[in-house]
Length: 246
Ligand SMILES: C[S@@+](CC[C@H](N)C(=O)[O-])C[C@H]1O[C@@H](n2cnc3c(N)ncnc32)[C@H](O)[C@@H]1O
Image 1 (tube, rainbow, N blue to C red):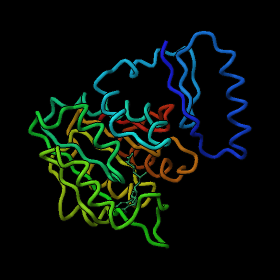
Image 2: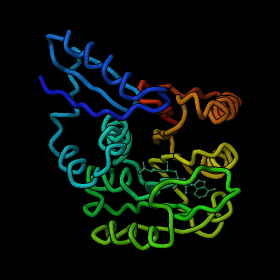
Image 3: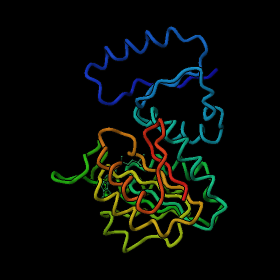
């Protein structure tokens, strides 16, 4: 049985003590099928995404940091959610893309260049004090160009620097098959949901990256209420993501 192990866990007091405890637990597992990282610990699981050669090839190419390597299960959810909509006549959207890692894995996984679809990516790419979202290590003046370089091999990548939701009024697709919301920002994310909802085609996938994370509880509360008013409920996944099939 294959395993996937990283030491990335968010929100622990003493990381060394936490990992030592986890190692003790892992040592008691006889079956394999162990996934460790991104606040997940499983064992005796098939972890079938590890046998998905297309996914693992893209993952091994683009996931570089420990945090990215720990996010494999999340990427597998995105890959599945995008691929299942490839028969729909709509585009792919990610708000927001940061380094473009999750979006590039998805683009390779669905072989975007072999389709007529476009992928629309948005981000501020930079961070200033006072902004609603937290800063991240690669925010800065080079990030926008670096993301454009990452997507240079994808013909229909539309990478836009700007603030969501305002920027969406300047450039956004009319028909969407796959929407990934990952803004770490309740106001921006609910505004993006409001903007895009009617454009997501019936059968389209919507993935909320922050939906199940306690640190983003306000996002879940707001999105849950917003969806409920329209007769929908997101499925909270063990990865911390939320999933809606429209
Ligand atoms: C967690 S990162 C996205 C990671 C990316 N989806 C991935 O998995 O590779 C969140 C991003 O949201 C962006 N962001 C937050 N609020 C925003 C807003 N109002 N408009 C545009 N981007 C925003 C931040 O700049 C940050 O890069």
